[in-house]
Structures are given as C-alpha cells and as structure tokens.
Image 1 (cartoon, rainbow, N blue to C red):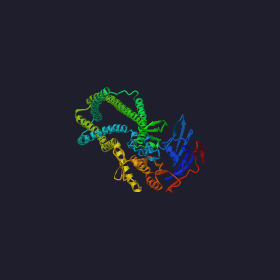
Image 2: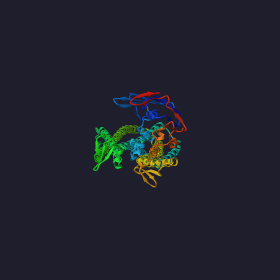
Image 3: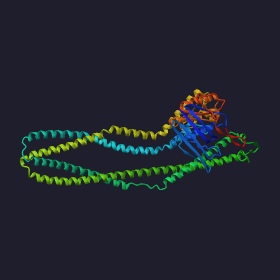
Image 4: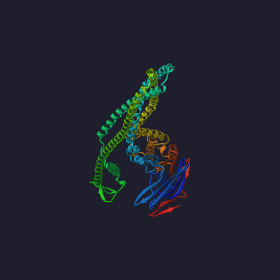
Length: 596
C-alpha cells in the first residue's frame, strides 16, 4: 500500500510531495527543512490541524489512499483560518482520538500534561464526552420497550396455542362424524335438493355471520376501552415548554468553555511562577540582589524593579482569581446539568406525546373498521334471516334433518378453516419468542455496557498503560522501577523503591511516559481501527538507540508510522522520506525566504 501526499502552503512547506509506505516512514532532514511541517500536513489531511503557512491566505493538501483522494483546503479570512473539503476523518470522536492518541507530536496534549505533571483523567477519557451516551441509552430503552411489547404478544400467542390446537382437533373430529352421518343420509335424499342446499348454505352463512358479529362487537369494545384510556392519558400528559432552551444551553456551554480555558491558562501561569518561588530559582529568570530586608529583583515579564514579597503577593492575587473562576465554573456546570436534565425531560415528554397520538390514531382507525364491519354484518344477518324464513316454508319436514346436517357441516367446515388460520397465525407469532428474547437481552446488554462504559474505559486505559509500561521497561534502560496511573489518573513513579516526582526524571524518561500514556488511550478506544497512521515528532530527549527501540515498538501498533529523524540517526527499517525537492520556509535574521 502506497499513500501519495501533495502539500501547498501548510505550516513551513510552500510546496512539496512525497509517498508514504506501509510500516515505518522516517522523514530525515536537518532543522528548518520541513520534517514537522510534513507531519502537520498529514494531520491536516486527516482533518485535525489547520496550520496555514505564515503570510499565505490559502493552503491545500491532498492525500491519495488506494483509489480515494482526501483533499483539504485552508483559507485565512480576517485573521481566522477555516477548513473545507473532505478530510479522512469526519467524526468528532475520531478527531479527538487521533489528536490525543495517534498524532504524537511535541504539542500532543497527553505528552504535555505528563511533562507538567498534570492529572490525565480529562484527556484520557475526553472521547467519551462526544459519544452522546445518555442519548444512545434513551434510544435503546425506547427500542427495548417496543421489543418487550412484541415479546408479550408472542408469549400470549404461545399461551393460546394449546387451546387453539385442541379446538382444531375437536372440530376435525366433529366434521368427520358429521360427514359420516351425511354419507348415510345421502342415500335417502329426495326432491327439493336445490332448495335444501340453498337453505343449508344460508344457515351456514347466518351462523358464520353471528360469529362475525360477536367478534366485531368484542373488538369494538376492546379498542374503544383502550382508546378512551389513551385519550385520558394524553389529556393528563404534561409536556414542558422549552422555548429558547437550546440557545440558553449553548450560551451556558460557551461561557463554561471560556471559563475553563481561562482557568487552565491562569493555572499554568500560577504553577510555573509559584514553583520558581518555592524552589528559590528566581536567578533563572532575572538578576536578584539580596538585601537585609528583602530580595530585590527585576520583574522577568515587564522589567520593573520589584521584590520577592511583591511577586508572591501577585501570585496570591492570581490564586484568588483562580478560586473565583473555579466557583464560576462550578455554578455554570450546575446550570448546564440542570438545563440538560430539563432538555431530556422535555424530549421524553414529547416522545411520549407522539407515541400516544400515533396509538390513538391507530385505535381510531381500528374502531372505525370494527364498527363498519359490525354494521355490515348486522345488515347481512337480517338479510339472511329473511331469506331463511322464506326457504324454510319450501322445504318439507322430512328434509329438515338433512338440511340441518348439511348446514352444520358447512358451518363446522367454515369454523375449522378459521380455527386453522388462527392457529397458523398464532404459531407464527409464538415462534418469534426466541428471536425477540435474544434481541431484548442484546438491547439490555447494550444499555448496561453504555452505563458502565466510562468506568470500563478508565479501567482498560490503566491496564493498557501497565501493559505498555511493561513492554517499555524491557526495551529501555530507564532510571525508575515502575509507574502507574491511580484511580484518579494521577501518574505515580517509583524510583529507588520510593515514590518520586516526575520532575526528578530525565527529559527522555518523561517523554517516554507521555507516549505510554497516549498509547493507553490508543488501546482503550481502539484508535487503530479508526486511524491507520501514527505520527511521532519532538523526541529530542531520546538518543538514537532509544528512538530505534521506540519506533520498533510503535510500528506494531499502526499500519503506518511516520516520524521525524535527524541525518545523524542510524537508518530505520522502512521507507525514507527526504525533503530535497520541497520548497520550505527558512527563517533568518528578520528575513523570510523560500528555499528549494
């Protein structure tokens, strides 16, 4: 399998193209020659990146896989970059999974979080936020109710089978006795046979009509009772209003997102500066003069003279602002949850109202049919009775027995035909029980799987992390014994038999743990089935030997692996991509130029 990639104005590449093969693909070049930009172009083709070349208004990338071409255009309008075209990935969950667990460049959020020693739960479970689990459960439960109703009808049919079978057997026996009696009587048949036949036929029709009348009356009563009950249920149903609910929820979610982003930014600023103060590393950022009363220094942001105490006071102010943002976030999240619950209540009531109205329509149609059939049957009964009265005068008393016997035979034949038809119908309905029970059990299992999905994903993620870590510890010579994800998704490292800070590890060790954490999400969400490629960049903390170990390990987890490589690295077993004919951006002393 060969992929063809064409690039125009993506990141640092003006124009370029290359082929990508199955297995390992190493983009070998020095700095500023487009290695990372090439990986960015792949991300753009998959729909997760919009990095347009600086100073350009339009960009384009094409990725040809087999007989399908995925083309993405980027455009800059009023400072905003927009994406159009047909990227490889279109589903939101696939986008999130690719960005977090397959595209392992230096800006990968999981790797960044490990570098900073942050909690990983939000990142490693983020795809769940886009799966609409509650909505899926509601749809499955509605389908489950429908299957339960069908199963109940099938069970009722199964319960009726013995009685219907007995009825058919009895009618067959009765018909056989009547036929024997008729054969004996047939030799004594005399005149008026035509009138007798007609009278017998009319009597059979009359008995059948009476049976039809009883059935139509029973059906009309049953349907009428259910119709009244459904109408009363509809009248008492309260469907809440939801005007502006969607807009209000969207506004609240937008406000919540902005507050979360502000909180995250302030948290980063606060933690870094607080760490500088706590570890007494001010000299890393500015000149410090130690006076008797306080340390004097130049602010490393604005350059103004200040003191350690004033810097600490400013950090306390930032901490207060963080606490205020957390309070706002909690309040907004509570309001969002309340609106979502109200939205679900409205949807349930609306669905119930639709179901009731549909059922009422069906019942009204059934009632109309039953009443129409009943009226027709009554008219037919009156007509038959009049015809029978007229014919009875024409048939002699000696023929009454034969006529009655023939009528009874015809009626029994008709009743037997109906009974056999009803028996076959009920058998067909009852035969669906096993299928319906399996379908119901499958639906219940799906609902239960969805309800426990988050906990299962978290457990699978921790298991996948442990498995990947075991593989890595065998391949790499690292300075820690083990690491694990806690139930709360904090990353804990053991070194020298004791828990150690991530900051005490080397840069390469932290990068390895970041990649392992991303691979845990890759395994838990089956990303290999969603995204056929894995990207690796920003691995300067690892030496040549460890890079080769890592590449060998990653190549087992994706059909295609693309990584950046410096010229001094040993050759990889796979395909080499060289940027010789690419036009890239070169950054010199305040000069931007295109180099071939």
